[in-house]
Image 1 (cartoon, one colour):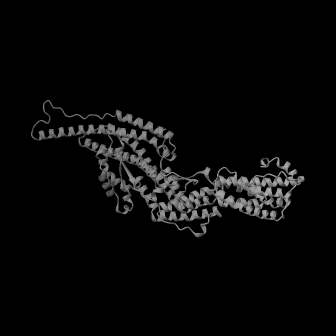
Image 2 (cartoon, rainbow, N blue to C red; image 1 turned 135 degrees about the vertical axis):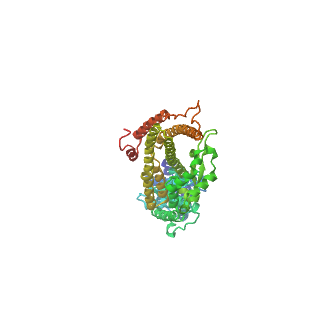
Image 3 (cartoon, one colour; image 1 turned 45 degrees about the horizontal axis):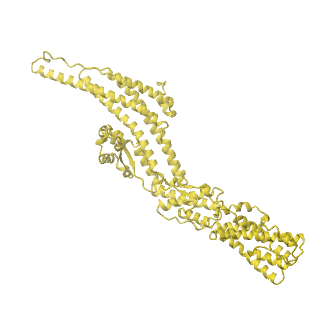
Length: 582
């Protein structure tokens, strides 16, 4: 600043001799007039007087620089704050000019009058030099000048900062008390995202007056909570009056407000909207924990699901599901409905009903925040896996039933087919794998995770805790390496298909033998020969077990690979307790 003062001024001062003229020019310079001494002045100043004049000239330069900054952006709140700070200085100049006109002002008196304003103008000049006129940049001065020894500087900066941060606190109050985001706010919005991810913090745009003690994170959380109450609970929450002034003791009041809001939200979700009951309904039907529902549904819809997916009718399956539910369990069952996946398959594919059958769940706000669309998709993925396991168990039961009927027919015809025992032993190995997997899923995964979820719901203190507990619950339900089960399932289905083909051929053969013997008995009863001259008795054709035995070897190989790569130690112990697959 000193370098910008007129260098020749000191030389001109030494040639001046009229102190009144010098004082007049100095006061004019403080009011915006360019500084110049009269050529006729013959005032012989000492060296100390030269220093005083230079200091007063520096004060004039600071004032002009502040005024130019105000003129550059006169409508900003920063300019208004600077203008308010200059009012006292302008009053002082008017008083000094009156004293000069009354010949009651000396150069030394002027110097002493301007010492304190000079210090204040330095601070104001620094603030006016900030490139941006936004409040966050002004508030940078607070930590810089808060530790200064001068109360004047600290008070000046605090006064300006309190003025220029008014728009910031106005936006903060709109967010905290109404849950609405103002333009140019440091909280952004992703409109298409779920509630938990919809609002985020723009850390680079947080005002420096708020960027401390985790206040931005608290502001984000409180605003989201009040937004949830207004948007999803569709009600107005009355905030306690002592929490309205959040500009003082911000962190403590935000903590207290957040506690009040979360208690209100948790009570509404858990008591009024029955969050726990909805989660239990999802467990009962999507995770097939309700055994009576599953057994009744399969007994009534199993034959329908064995057919092509194109023949399935949603209304028929919905009716069968409703009939499979006991009256005591109908409270939230109306939210569960059938979802057919046949539209997702390529036209021309032979898709059976088992692969096209799925469930969906209707969730309305505010529960849709805790049980969102992505969570329903996870439930559907879990349903598909558990449904596949139960489907194989159902097919194994039908497979055993079909083989038992064949053995009864063989016994009736006094025949014997030793290869049926081979197929029976293979089926027992498969059944051992499936039943242990079912038991593991039910008792060590589903029940354990549900118990933990119930405890976390009871301990939750915020809406975020509820969402986090539900997401953790779903993550624990999905078995690690779930995709590794697919190769084993494919091999089991191939074994069932190949053995069923052989069963059908054997059944056809036995029906022909039974018909032949019955015809022979009828001829004998009429006094004729049992067999015609060129007729031979229908022989029993042996079952071809080569394809089935190949499937058995592939099944054992896939199980060994699964056990070697599986991280589910409890399941591995169940399947490998006798070391059979070693």
